[in-house]
Length: 299
Image 1 (cartoon, helix red, strand yellow):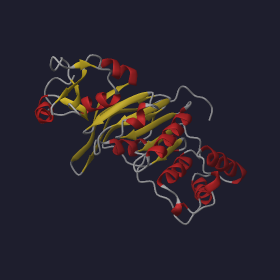
Image 2: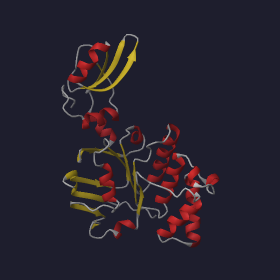
Image 3: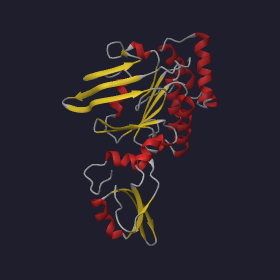
Image 4: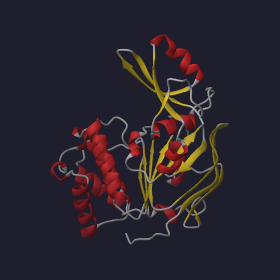
């Protein structure tokens, strides 16, 4: 893919309703090359957004523009440069990785020496060279996900969408997958949709937080952390006090100790005399953005 810093995908008042249920409402987002970490609880609307960006689902309202072209009216403008790894990615268990990628290349209109060279390069990239001839049915979850990312990269996409890619992976496979995504970003737009904050902490150049179909936050990680300065506190309480504390404040972490429970709280004001300010992290930012009906000014 030729470097192209003009790549832009944007949504304008994007909405989607299923049988009267509003899955996405007036969603406005503009992205350029880099990795977007799309965070949100299960059911927040992340997969709905991903499927619309991947031209699989049609919006109920609003528009999606790829370099200024309306992809709802002309989906082929995006499909030819799109790579997509859906949450429910499935494989043919009797095919080997080599055979599966050859099949997917044919679907994408690739053939001959060019396709074989691309498949060979991708097997090396996702570290599956040694297992390329083994049936996919015997692959681990992490290995299947690596096959998934390989098929998404066959056409060297300018837009790469991966939806909840680390669900079910063990910690080592999760780290390996995150590192792979970082290596792939370059001059393309990568959207990583997840509800696992640690998946985006070390990779994302931008973070968007979605909750109940609405975009709550979109900014660079360092901007989000700066906004939380002097809003995160820690101190130790006894176990009996914890339930009441959770009613008063947004508690983002607890740690059992011999002398009680060390609590981590988001609050715009100092919660008590014992509380000490601490550096915020993205978990604090995320939980504050999606918190509902808590007291104490989580800010």
